[in-house]
Length: 229
View 1 (cartoon, rainbow, N blue to C red):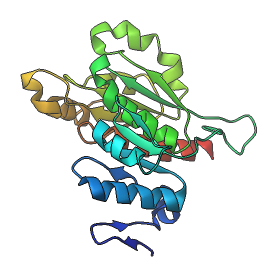
View 2 (spheres, helix red, strand yellow):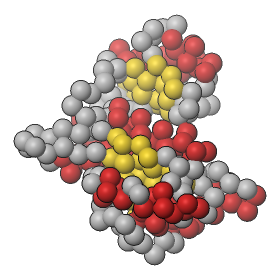
View 3 (cartoon, one colour):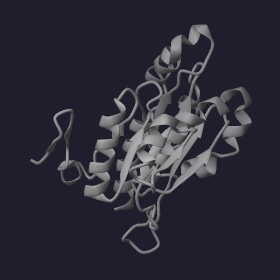
């Protein structure tokens, strides 16, 4: 198995061969010079690079070395590379797939966008449905058809995190629940939503860590690839 020694990092150049996904950069907290060098190496080797939790300042630094780099201030994703023109397409004629990423509220969109853009970068088609939380249950019920047609659903919610349970009771496809840190004091920074999602009585729900949109997008991509065949 191969990796590239950089002293401050060991780039896992063999990861895509092993797992089907290239190494992704967690940008937050990395010293500036290390981050720039990591981006240059990955982009030079793969022709694409994807990172999460980046700041505007980090974007400006990387852009000096990689002019093609793109930054989304909502999801905080920092990426460069060719976009897939065959997202969700299968080798089987007439068969295509998509992932739904939905949120309980508008405040959950940054985490949802991290999930959606992760899946899109890895070649999936994503349908976004924002602000369908349980305080207006008719909103999620009005989207039942598109939810049921997806290969999987990523349900992103803070507060009490009930959206995942409602969606899980409406669909036969897998639901990936993402608790967010959105909420008032007793939400305990997302712990309330996390516990609700873990304790859901709806079947077919799996839960990732608080605010982990990237992890949800990764798993959703794996499910979508299997569904695609």
